[in-house]
Image (cartoon, rainbow, N blue to C red):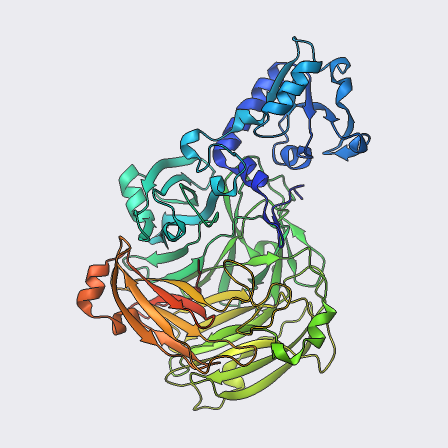
Length: 632
């Protein structure tokens, strides 16, 4: 496992990690390693404890010895080296000293004052991004300098990908946002590199693999698109929705969420295949050094017998791994844990069935969580507490299923219940799942717990909640995989997400979560893309309520064109614990939709309550897609 700290639930992201992981930094550190190798013994001066992540991410750096400034760190071990006091550098035999840090002028000056002139002093400033790629040139490790992410990107075998987002940074005061993009093929080779400005206002953004392929005269590819947004404000993550679209005789259609820019040791929520399916995990190296053989493994959830992939994966390369290669005996609804060793951001997986493919993502399995006994005794003011709202699509046309997924390494039990509501918020039933063990394979098909006439035309939703009647523990990181299939068998989609406390004024450990500012989060700002190429977008909006709140939402659907101009606005009132299916093309006129264009979008805004949403596309060939929405 890579010795890197990427994200802390309290402190947020580790900017140093992103500064080291950027592809341009990887190239610069590679050049630096070659230079240092040629110049003789190298000492690493590590005043800020950077040696671990630096050397685990870039093992080619030829470091012979380690020196520190803090006397308390002398004698400790970092990256396999024992730390010595910096006063011993001159007698160490080193010909070059590398300062493990950026903006290192002060440290370099300090070393120059105590070292002879024939010892060279360098720093990680050798690997700084060019000033043209920085939002804040005065402070290199400003999070806004590294608003970046990866996307699975493909244009091959009749399938293309289309990434859509908005210039949401404009809402935080950004005036000139632009993207620097680099496309890697499956081998990790750079295929294309370019810059593209974002709209000046809060306009829509789209990167289409068909357009990229034509623009650069490329052949077929399946790899990664790296995105770096420059000139941003307010958010240091590039959020997006990614559609996979079939062309010609290829009828596939699916969508997935942004990649979550922080690598994790483990991921969960990967389904085992049905007998008529193949499940492909896409391993995409997020770093500039190879993934060593045996570093990636798959395990049947709860078995603790991981099976490793015995091959190296090159820098920024992609490898499609059929789950059956490593775990041939697993079948749905069993589930798979991915031991990723922090080598990749949230991976994608692909389910291939009856000639069609659907893309989804696994989720970060938390290593820092332990069971929280406080959840068992949450006061009445928090009502049902943590809940995971999930759609039940209209049952006349769709079949809906849910599979709870452990999402913390410490999780051993999952005491669960499903509360099912119709669109108007009426409770239809409660279904107790029991106190499920970590290795469970309990999938609930809503056909089996609902009457034949329930939710046929409009649909509704269910909340997955904790229920301790048979004991068990909870950590608040409750997740599930939701699978949806058309009744005619034409297509399927799946998504996964986690629980929060929703719509209470009382708070508990950062819940109800807020996108900006302290809890409680009691407002909504969700992005709904529009369709293109004959496909129409939709959203399944849910008004989840842990306790008592407003009887109905006061939701505004604000249609924007591709430049960010507001074209129209419509209201929507959703019942508490209710839901609504939203089709922009059925709400706004054809003229307005044409004016919005393919980069237009709907901002779903509510200042009275926190909605949770799922979105997707439908086409006239039976295709549909579904994933959870993002907000900003």
